[in-house]
Image 1 (cartoon, one colour):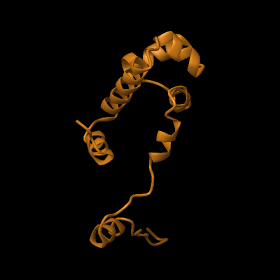
Image 2 (cartoon, one colour; image 1 turned 30 degrees about the vertical axis):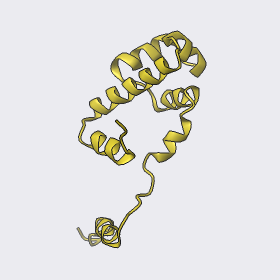
Image 3 (spheres, rainbow, N blue to C red; image 1 turned 135 degrees about the vertical axis):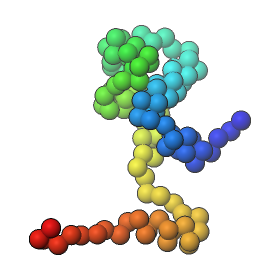
Length: 111
């Protein structure tokens, strides 16, 4: 079954931060296995200490810098470009709806 990027994003939005971390770790593990790499081999390819990678795969805990290194090692660094990307709207009504939330409200200096 193929999922669209919107399906994946919606699934992530409904999760907790811990759940998202675990999901990302599971995706990295699946990719590692697709490439027939051991944990040690991927850690070395990414320039990470083996215990750091092992902890990530089991708990989802990793620094952003090390996650980016894994992205490069798995040839998935361009995926980071989709994080926090500007939203694309399919209809004018959707655009208007999205812009309503962007209006800033400023308090007075005396507040």
